[in-house]
Image (cartoon, rainbow, N blue to C red):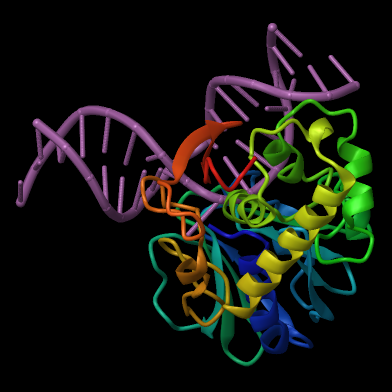
Length: 271
DNA sequence: CAGTCGCCCTGCGTGC
DNA sequence: TGCACGCAGGGCGACT
């Protein structure tokens, strides 16, 4: 489910609801997420105030005086703030009880998500310290990506989905950005010119920014911190449209698997 | 070393 | 209506 725009949408929604709030208690209803939810979280977080809510890659960070909560939504996770007496639903695995009677709940049917607790600077955490630049940040540009890709034989789609190269470009937006840039997803990274890398980076930024504006993409089950869906799915040009006509040239779009992910593209517009 | 692949889960859409 | 099957937005870590 959530790619960067969905996490950003969630982050922006949570920020005013959580900043400055005191956490009274952490209730772990099912701690078997991607990594087990640690006992230390429930022991050390309560009593602290949330100083800041931010995002790094697809991780949400809740900073407190004693440490930081790292939350990853995996494929099916969502977070919302609701009255603490609202009945729990089936996949509400972790909740943070807040002073004032509200609760932050993580729902994650597939349990690919994670809730981690770290006392060190979160940027130094082993899961964050190897991550590449933010796609909407200033250091991510065509020259950077061209430099990284110049000796790599792997398909360009694999390159832009590699979190060590650039974070937050998931399957949907990788497909969409490659279409917008007119680059075939299987093209070897080393066989793309600097000019085309510049176009690709512009496309990645554009697609992500537009998706954030639309509140993310709801394919099945994404909802933001208030439970609202995103509307970017209406703007998708290729993702999920195999067999349908390309909106640019009219030829049927194709689907094939690249690095184990369904990949959608136009065989004419993308070279 | 770069790059591929399996796998952690549940739910939903499709086709018989 | 029921069931089996394939597929799903992520990404670590084992493996070649």
